Amino acid sequence: MRYIVIKCGGSVLDELSSSFFTSISELQNLGFKLVFVHGGGPDINEMLELFKIEPHFVNGLRKTDQQTLKIAEIALIGHTNRKLVEMLQQHNFNAIGIHGSDGYCLQADYINMEELGYVGEIIKVNTQIFHLAMNGNYIPVVTPIGITKDGQKLNINADYAAAEVAKTLHAEQCLFVTNVDGVFIDGSVASSLSQHEVNAYIEKGEISGGMIPKVQSALNAVEKGVESVMIVSGKIAFFENGKWHGTRIFQKEPITK
Ligand SMILES: Nc1ncnc2c1ncn2[C@@H]1O[C@H](COP(=O)(O)OP(=O)(O)OP(=O)(O)O)[C@@H](O)[C@H]1O
Ligand SMILES: [Mg+2]
Image 1 (cartoon, rainbow, N blue to C red):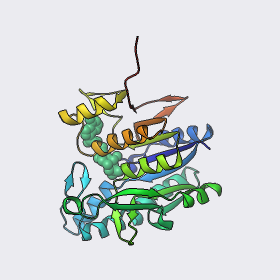
Image 2: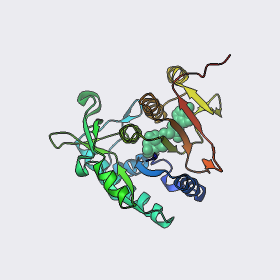
Image 3: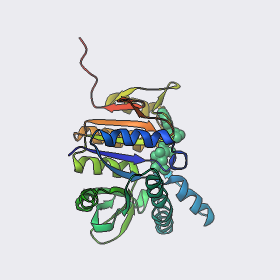
Image 4: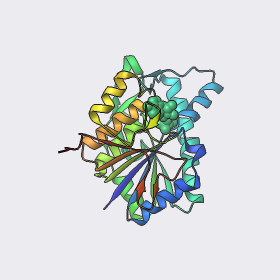
């Protein structure tokens, strides 16, 4: 089975264009089974503002105390997940929302409780629930909240979650859909970036904020065998007549003679 994991950034959910849906339907017509993982930065921030809680980030990761976790969960599952599922349905995709802790789907552990609080990394993805959905011709739309073996829920950066899901499903493709046309280097979109270049640009500060977990997750997916990993925009046709628009992330420079 050909799987494609599509991480849809919270940054772009309210701006997804009709050509975005045309692009994913083109991929579906090529025989790909789709799995969505969504982020929700703006929805979480909006709700934190209502509760007068200041958001804090460490290297693009949201520092999460108990209260922030509760609010993030309400925003992600109650609002963002619903929004994406409903948009997909309106565009005639058969979608079903799944909380990351449902069926112990995203099994997680703390990254660093002292530095980040209730933020997790995924230790195992249980794909059973995805297969159940896909066998019934539903597209799973997963909220990036993980669960520890003791039943504690943890906030997981959606880019990390998508890469882990892609690796576990042995997906052929993993897409990071965001609010910019790709990774900008020196003012224009890089058509491809190697592991070496990504690390150098992070060091130089050309890649910063939310783009850091994204390129790191992209590299992680590539290293673990996901064939094609791209960072693309949800505002444009990122895939059109078989042609990609965005930044491809790969491990090593191609050997040139
Ligand atoms: N070199 C770069 N090229 C492009 N964007 C960059 C770069 N460096 C930093 N960024 C920032 O990264 C942002 C994308 O990451 P961000 O985490 O904000 O969105 P997202 O992951 O799509 O959404 P969410 O986190 O809600 O899921 C861009 O909007 C831009 O501000
Ligand atoms: Mg992000």
